[in-house]
Image 1 (cartoon, one colour):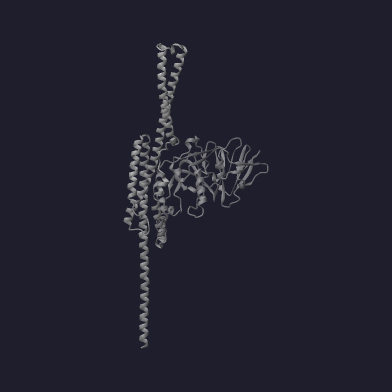
Image 2: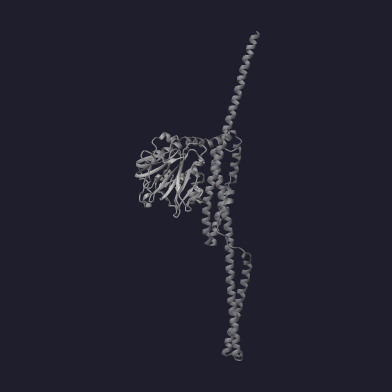
Length: 567
């Protein structure tokens, strides 16, 4: 019996808990449904009110433009036309005000369709009333101004008539005095001609006195009537008061604000809006982060690079007018021209410009001083390439100078002799010094290639050219090599240091796409063509060898800028 009661109690308790759980679920669902319905109704109501506000604003702008054109056209019409338009405006205002309905801009709001219709009608009615009221006020002011102008014109006319009558009276008096002075006796003797003329002038004078008096009295009366209108001026051209017109939509905006306040208290709205706002952007960012780099690289690899490969190569030799003297090559089968240190013979009449840290040893008798820039004609190039604060050496006798990269064990130094008539396109980033004649300026020039796709794809728009005779002291990581271009050679762009001007320079696409896509190799390699031309490169370039490394973006940006200027 006891076990049976325990089983019954467990059964009842389990089902009671289920019953309570169902109640909670149903109440939560009802609450969620009520919140969703409230959010949907509020959103639709606010959207309807915003639509009404927008349409009313557009309607008001159209009415304002029409009213401005219509009223300003009345400036040159008669007062009768203005009065007729004023009567029409008053009639329209009376009809609009009589059509007023109880305000629907209250909460709770009616259904969306009804609210939208009534809101648009009521907002449009408020706007029309405001525009017509402004027009009526302006027409009243215009009527008053025109009435004042008419009164002043009448006063001026009556004053002119009085002045004319008074002048005629004075003229009559002068004629009588002159007649009496000429004929003092005859003018008083009846029957004489003088007496007849004097009588006529006296009768005319009496009439002129009456005319003058009437003109004066008419002028005084008009002046009294005009005294109240003398300060009334014609108003400026009609323009709608935009602030007042905007105020006509204040009830709509108040209802929108109330609806938005109610929506702000809905927890669905609080979560839905932020998520929906950022979700498309987040999806787009994720998609662009995946596809955009691939698309850009694919476009460069499959479109721009093949186009550039088919274009004519660059040539610097045509505009330099050099005789084509090439550089001396190392023995057959060898191309390495660098060493850890180099010994140079500095002859009298020559000067050496060298970075101080590369000057390992020099004779005591040499003359040393500081030269601030490699070439003052190219200050930016000298500073950007690091060719500043150089040590200038000169000697009265032949002196042996040892050059070495003492601060970096991986750097080697090469000596490149440019004979007279030869020219070398060189990137000053690899230059550590040079030897040239003391009495001659350094033959250095720059050449832009803005119309070449090769230049734009490699971002090297400017080429620096050194002309012989000059000896360049060049550095390179793990060594520097000098090779003949022959029928065509290709090397990494980051390794290129320079090439002679008789070389045809172009670019060619890297052989495989996946290493380029994974940033393991550059898009383009440098290509050199030309039978006698030579090119110069370093074996293990550090410049531009970390295309995919995070944290070196600033260094990469500055390298790109320097590359544009050929440095």
